[in-house]
Length: 161
Image 1 (cartoon, one colour):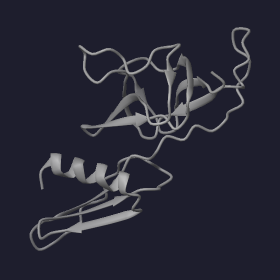
Image 2 (cartoon, helix red, strand yellow; image 1 turned 120 degrees about the vertical axis):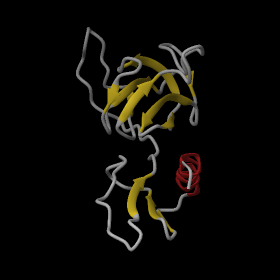
Image 3 (tube, helix red, strand yellow; image 1 turned 135 degrees about the vertical axis):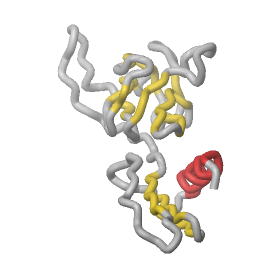
Image 4 (cartoon, one colour; image 1 turned 60 degrees about the horizontal axis):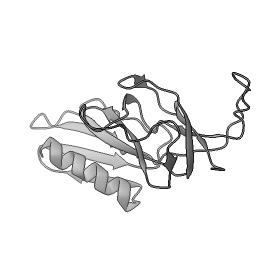
């Protein structure tokens, strides 16, 4: 199975709503799980098989959740009314799809549910992060091409605008 096929399979499983998909051939075994609390990509220890096969467990990217978070007043502004878009996985944060294109969002932009706000690269897979909230981007909390952790705040959004 080629890398592109694995990427497409992960995207398909993430969008399908399935919680777990297992695919096994004589050469490899892959398990894709969604709904995991970790949300990161992991590789299990290879198992020993007759032909030296390996087992890989891959968790598909999780949907971005934007719960209300109480934030302290910073710089004289009360940020407790803002929602936070967090990183669904560990990886590298990109504000745009390629170096010669504009960023997905800027401070002051209005976003809707389903809008792509950034890309996070993990293990050579580029995962588009879509907003689950509508509002106005108030602050971008991460620099372009920076490493991010699971559940790390990426954007502050004012849902009232």
